[in-house]
Length: 381
Image 1: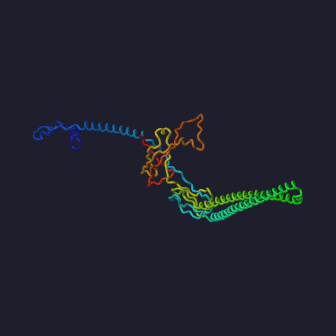
Image 2 (image 1 turned 180 degrees about the horizontal axis):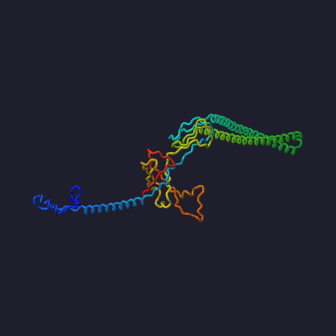
Image 3 (image 1 turned 180 degrees about the vertical axis):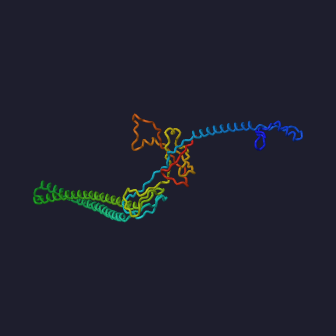
């Protein structure tokens, strides 16, 4: 056997197409020769080249589209949900007798959160009410004293008018008798003249005394009016004390001033609480986003722009919002110890500026609270 022949008995060398065609012609009984097969390799290479070109063009187009899309979006991952957490504190001191709420409970405005023992404040209210009644009695007495003083003044004025008339009559009699005595000394006795003179002086003295009584009665009216003013002031003070006592009694019931969720509850029944002591906190339902954008992006941002918000706690939810305001100053400027850059080793760092974003509507199926991370995206026109 030939060394070039394989063990299978076939020649490993490629067959001659001409000889194959001849054999095929002979086998076909002398018909026309068969059509030679097409070349497949050059055609496949052409297709691969076209596909590669198409892929490169598609990648370039996708890159341009992605670049254009990204260049029209401003976003940041330095953003958090914010709100103004309301601390709940009592206004009066006392022992807690009831806490009808629990942690993370939703409450409405006006709902009772804590009850403080009201007994001492009820007693204080009763005391102030009694003091108010006493002050009102004093005011009524002062008003009555004014009426009495006015009546006394009227009496004094009447007595003064009477004594003044008597004094005038006595003086007139004295003048007439003196005139008669001057004309005829024997017509009026000396003793009679002395009596008439004495009566005139006495009438004048009575008139002066009556006048002083009028002055005294007028002073009594002024004193009664001053006493009435003092009594009225005591009534006003008593009313204020009653109002304060009622407020203190009302303050024994601590209620929620706005709707929200109870957090950080630290009070329990039996605790003695004091004014200003924090008992719990309420997270309001009004939430927004504080996003710290780079200062180099601020020229692209303005209030009113629509924002798409991705929430880390709810990855399948996209919230919608809008920009409300931009803080006038970077976050570092409001630190307790703001940086002092007037040094020789200053290195410029791009600052972050807080931007407030309000939700158009809060997602109902997502639990949100202050401090949770979000990623806002602003689509530029």
